[in-house]
Length: 278
Image (cartoon, rainbow, N blue to C red):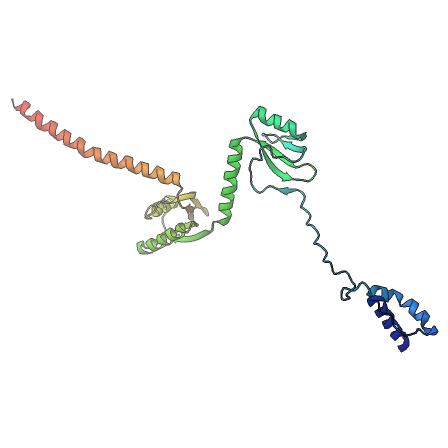
């Protein structure tokens, strides 16, 4: 491009953008070049660096909602249903198809059921008719699943010929893990020259030596073709602790009654001896 053409393009762009009338005259031989460069000058007028350009900030585009998002928790929505047409699943799991909101409310009142949102769709959201007991059971399942995902499982391996001191230290380690709400998988291995013994019973006897009560995720059982035994222990639940305390109270009461019975028997013998002598 000729230097004169470049000069004309810059002058014409400045005049178009800033509205300044330049005294510079366009040579006749540069008109063709100017006509070709009009597009470039017009595009500069919309440059964000120019004062004449529109400085308004474009608002961010609204986020689109995901279709078919499932409900995170099982809760009754009551009668708060904004849609007029919804897809309904019965209490037994049967698909009732798309129903009107009024018909669903009428069915709820007749059968004494509650409405639970399963999937939020734009066209026809999916709801399920459930009883209060079913909702409670589903909520318990969700809680146990969350706890199971957060619980860590520790592993401990014992040998059948372990020394008493080493066994005590191992069991203390298990107690510390249980205090941190962990599950512990304990494996008892039999030695090569070990005679035939009941490994599951032996493992249960070892656990009874612990100072704290434990609960079982899985009871002691024999694995690896009888060469080992395994169980998974956890902290006992409140129901198990209450049952244990109740059994201890019954045992203590029975122990208190046995000395009294022996004392009464001795008194009977003493009273009967004089009668025999007479």
